Length: 238
Image (cartoon, rainbow, N blue to C red; front, side, top):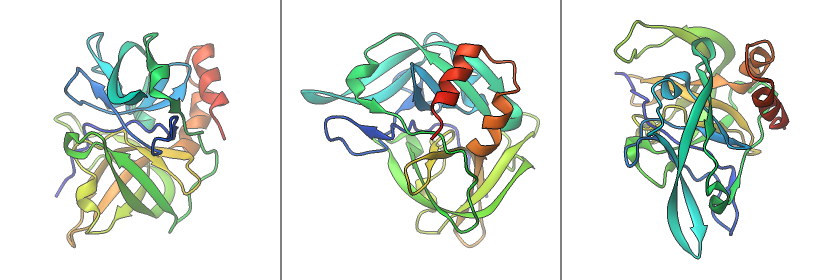
């Protein structure tokens, strides 16, 4: 069985106005949800490269907001500034907007590697749900390795830097279509990676494949990326 992770969530780390932490939004042509990303400040989001690649000026970043009442804010996409398939990472710049009304408090980027047995949390719009639902993961293979996508998206299979976490059978339905690019946080609320694919297991549980921050932070510093964009990413480190 394969898990197609196409549409997902945006971690907000915490929201002002006493909102619950880790609320999520979608990336896509509203009201459709085509992917996900995490806001790291200064109007930039991190997402998967396969999510960022097809974005256009008609796409937006949909986040929960609060100004007197609950509402949803659509923030326009200005441009994609970085893509790398080997680490399944895309960086997208948002248009100047009402993003401040969302009260976004972003998670910092963890520079440490996760360990086998560590408990993580992903929040995602599985099945297009909004607001999203959380799921608890347990790291089963903490070695960052290039691993071949077990569920190719109608294209030639490719590999990306990956660590693997496992969902128990009772949590497996909480990650799936709608979770690609979903933010993965550790118990301290730090971003440790982004979901990029996964697969079901025979016993009803599932694997979630994560591109880890600890691997791609180093690669970003050596990549051809605008200096101002790199600075935003580096300032987001914990």
